[in-house]
Image (cartoon, rainbow, N blue to C red; front, side):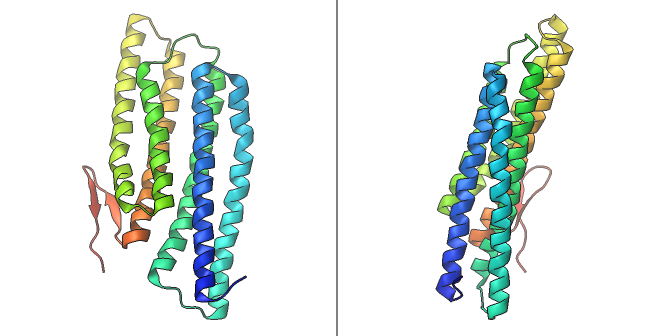
Length: 233
């Protein structure tokens, strides 16, 4: 493998490109899971579960490639600047977060199988929440591709929208149960899926934090009310 400074830069860029492609792969998986849920299509849900194998395979390959890159840098006594080191750390962490989002997609697909036998229609709010989850993941992937810290900050703010949709969804479910228009079993499954959507948003904000760190060196964290940038040492 190349061990010149430009060679290491090329390898880092190659990993970042692979990370973006992995993000698109995971986004496709999440869309497939939701489509299976909305259409009550068990076969599509099964395809989603099967497609997760490729995500797992790429996850391991990227982890090994990142470790090999750092190992080669140490062996060659190469000096990687702070920007390069931050990018490698970001790639490793985001790679792990994407694998977890893929796990969320599989969980949604598996829940679709349970909900298929229940006759209640999905609330409109849920479709909006699902679209928001996919949109947040899409913006996260684009921020990786374009090294866009500003878009990553938009992702951070979007998490609150998913939480608000979940709260509205649960209030709607309570009203439907009270009026006899939704079974308790269906409401329970709906709550499970909504919680998974919230977890997807959490993983995306974790990635957004890392992208901001990679591009600016700033460390951002969430307080009870807002996102803050920690003082730099």
